[in-house]
Amino acid sequence: MKETGPLNAILEIKGLKAYYETIKGYVKAVDDVSLRIKSKTAVGLVGESGCGKTTLALAVTRLLPSNGRVLGGSIFFNGKDILSISEEEFRKEYRWKKISMVFQGAMNALNPVYRIGDQIAEAIIRHENVSKDEALERAKKLLSLVGIDPKRAKSYPHELSGGMKQRTMIAMALACNPEFLIADEPTTALDVIVQAQVLKLIKSLQQELGLTLMLITHDLSVVAEICDYAAVMYAGKLVESADIVTIYKNPLHPYTKGLVNAFPSIRGEKKQLVSIPGAPPNLLNPPSGCRFHPRCPYAMEICRREEPELVKVDGDHQVACHLVSR
Ligand code: SF4
Image (tube, rainbow, N blue to C red; front, side, top):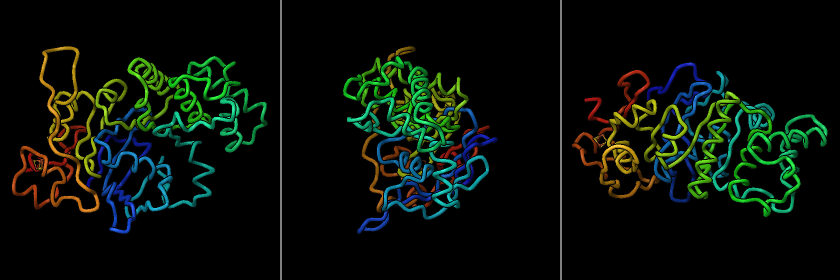
């Protein structure tokens, strides 16, 4: 697959294959994906559950579960191939220090028996040579940065609302001043008002701290809210990527069009929302040719036989569909 995305990349993924080994064979969760993410931008990685978004993020942070295998490709961070270095070097130099992650379901990730200030301080002490007092001071500043009164550093997780827990997890992810933040479905368990507040916070932190953000979500409206670019994944493949306006105004891949049509708008004409028929395929035995063909209203004979290549349409806009590449 060709390289995709803007130049001046902080993260460059080339032909990545991240599979899960099972007794029935390999689940091809990320299958030959290439993606470039420009420094200090916000990129939304979008797609239905099970399309490989989280696996891609876990491969970047080298946190795949024990049956996860990277069977091909490379990941460059600021030009350094981070899959070829030792786990020791990655843990010391990259994970949390340069590349950090807010995990899915993070609100349940706080330790219930430790005060939140201590938990953030511990993350700092693990990666930096600082005293406990210094780390606690930094933890308070981080809490303040995410809009929590520093006095709450003495609170236990059960004393916080859902939104405050999520803010605490974001503070923890920022503890070692990373350059690159991955947020995996950071607002899924929150109500819409708190969701909007947390998204606003993530966007303002990204801009204030000059972070590069990879936001993983199944919700295109979340991407519209805070991202500059969108990369759409389907069944382990990258099917379209472009700046956010192009994705909304001129989506070319039928799957992206389906996502956009399923997205309600409070402005403009009222329109009927259309869901994408069918379900994503089993990635143990993905469909031949284009993996979207069993659900695609435009599927042709070639789609069942040949996998479409990702082709550049215009600027940063890239699409993998025979309708475009014919
Ligand atoms: Fe549909 Fe064919 Fe395009 Fe796949 S390649 S999205 S099946 S038209």
